[in-house]
Length: 412
Image (cartoon, rainbow, N blue to C red; front, top):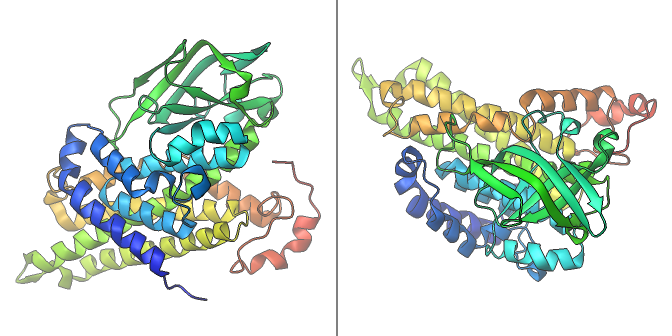
C-alpha cells in the first residue's frame, strides 16, 4: 500500500495550488460579495488543462489520472467552490459521459472543444418536481422524423446560462418511468431554448446557477446520446463521475478551514494565552483533522478504483456523503473558533460555511447516500452493479456474499 504521489501528480498539485493562491484567493471574497463569475479564472483553468484533466489526449484533454483530478478539485475548492463546481459539471457530469456514451462524431463535435476549454458544458437533470426521484421528471421529447420536439423545464443547473453545450434528459416514453428517459446534447442558441439565472441562493454566489426552459425545441436525432430509454443509465454514470469531484472538492473546504483556524488559534489570545491552548478549541481542531484525513482516504480509494477502471459507485457514494458532511462541520467549527470575525464576510470564513451547504444536497443528498450504503450492506442492491467488485478494504462484503446471492437486482 503506497500513498506517495508520483512526480506528475505532485507537479499538478503544486501548479494548481499556486494558481489558487495567485488567482483565486486574492479576489475570492470580492467576487463572492459581488455575485460575480470571474471568467478570467475560468480561462486560467482552461489554460492549465483542468477542464479536460482526465479526458484522453486524443480528444483534446490532458490525459491525467483520477488522483490528479481529485488533487485539482481539492486545491480549487480550497479557493472557491464555484470553480470546483465547474469541474464537476463540465468534466465529471458532461465530458466523461460523452467519452463513455457518445459516438465518435459526437466526441469530435462536442467533447474535443470541451476538453480544450474552448466550450463550456453543463448537465441538466433536476427539475422543480424531480430531484432525488429522477423518474418524476416532466420534460418530454417527442420524435418527429429526424428530430425530437423537446418541452419542459430544468432548475438548479450549474452554469446553465453560460454553458455552450447542455446534456439534457427528457422522457421519450412518459409511461415507462426511469426506462423512458433519454439523453440529448443541446447547444445554446437553439430556437425555443431559453435560460435565466437563479438568484438569492444561500451560497456559491461567485458561481452560475440557472433554469432552462424548452418550448418546442427541435433537437436532431444525431444529438441523442445513447439509445432511446438509456438516459437513466447515462445519468447515473455521469453522477458517479460528478460525485467523485464533489467529494474531492469537499476535502479542500476542510483543509482551508483547518489551515485558517490553526493560524488564527496560534495568534489570537484570551485569558493570557493563545486560544489554541484551550482544550475546547483543540477539540474542534482535532475534529477537522479527522474529517480531512478520513475524507481524503475515501476519495483516494475511489480514485484508485477509477484508475483501475473498476466501477466504484458504492465507494464514490461513501466518499461524497462523508466528505461533504465533514466540510460543513469544519466550516461551522472554523466560524466558532474565529468568533465574531468568522461571522464577518470580509474575513472569508463564513463563505466556506455557505458554500459547503449545497453539496450536501446536490448529486445525491446525504439521505440518498445513506440509503445506498444500507442497501448495499443489506443485499437489496448489487455491490457496484451486477458482477461488480468492491474495494479490497471492504472486508464485510465477502462475509455477506450469501445474503447478496439470495436477491435478484434490477438492471441499472
